[in-house]
Image (cartoon, rainbow, N blue to C red; front, side, top):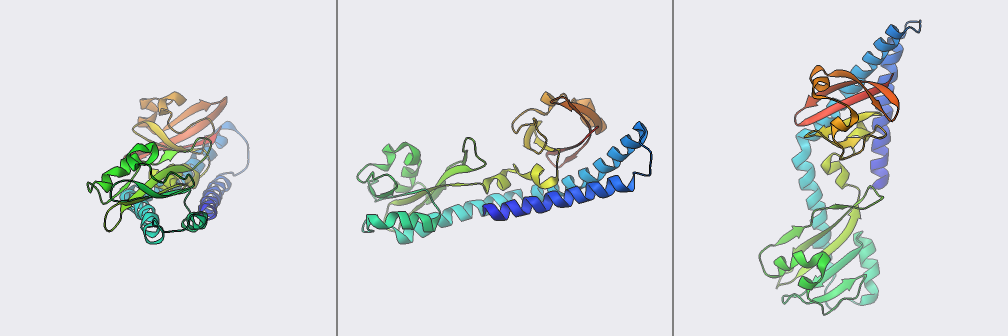
Length: 264
């Protein structure tokens, strides 16, 4: 999955770069005056912004579907574990099962909430409600829920997210699987900028959700870059980030703000 995502990102970047270079070539008719450089940047930005807007529009229109598909894949791991693992499964098979399911951990609790199988930690006999990471899934044991998934949490120093998914067992009890994945970046739009080209920023509610511009970090406020509301209203402005001055163009797509930049 990581290789597939990487190839998709590279393809998108090459496409954006080709479009930008084409725009630059088309408007470089000799000379090196400031006005011609400005014109070149403006046309390149038009191409870059149009490409990024298409990417963000596609994401916006499929946001709910992406989230649903992510949840389905997560629950399928738990459902598969429910068919494979039970209290009679030999412990020596646990590691192989985890690898085949592509999970880091799994837990099986009976109808009373007692854990009867676990990997990688052996916590058989413990009550699921007393195990902090998976205590939420005691609601499934009680019959309040049939399935549940925790909110994915970012793994520090990584592009991956960690989460747990659990489903009810026939006859009572629950199976919970835990794993890390970078697929969640697509769900929350964190990879939008990388897929839209270099020096691109995507924001929602004036906070950056994705950026391929160095020093414009995810989670930062757009105005922390020195960009004012008046700039965004005009849709064309300059900004300086980490000592580099950029010519920028911006536009709103649904609930998202798209900013594309070219070094001056």
